[in-house]
Image (tube, rainbow, N blue to C red):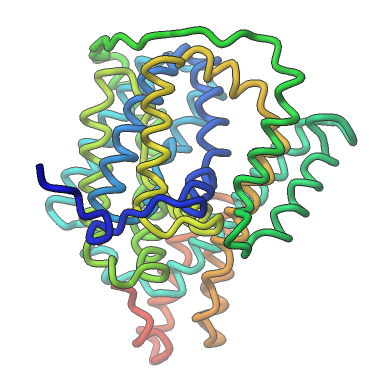
Length: 388
């Protein structure tokens, strides 16, 4: 039997890859608990199929390509207490749209006309959103001290900053380990075997109709801008040798396939994301081994311990989750160093400000309008900035 050449596939398993795999768990756990508790989704298929595609993407791309919940869909579902059938329908529609756009190369053609300063503005805006999300989570504890408190977040942040560049003692393992140690004395439930039995369920037409205007319309611009354009740009920054292997069309194809395949089984709508990639990279991930490891862990937990994992997730300190999300936000916000021209900085800050305060789609539109207004009015600042 032929051995797998992990080096050629850019797959490595070591403590830094394992630590990096934990970098994006904060957002995943928050949305997992939310859609299961509020919308009645089954945690097992969410874990199983996100795990399968973590493994798949790790081997296909050879990169720590994050798999995240589709945030707009998740937030709308949780805040409006929408049923699982509507969430599943939204994921199916998103998968179909992204698959078609990727196969026809519509998104890559659009990307050719997006200036670099606009992309950096999106990334900076996303970084600010992550910082606020993490801070908001920490503030929900409402406690100055205790196992889940402002003090816990501060101690975790100090440990993270002290160890963030330490190759021997990975920061994410320490922060996550602190969370486990603090949680265990307060974990009142028992761990029990919960074997996953796949059930195929197709939403009715009413669910597809509701999903199309309640979820798909708000999610689509976020997916194109964050999960595709911003993620492809980040791959070029971090892993230029792998950029063609993980170009925007291939990332989109993977995302579309992932959702079309998993939605009938009741999984949560999933996407790739610049924030998740940045967080995993920040905590040490450099190869596909990080997400393969994470995928195997999710798969095993979903197959055998789905219900217990949910109870475990509910007990994990949100102050620790918030701290990990903040670190991802800092990492994402650092990719602005190549924007130096005065007008580029103005565009970038405009995009970031509107993305943070309103939404990413409006920030993108504002940046594109200002960029091309200056371009067609005799300014040459943009001529070298087209991102493609």
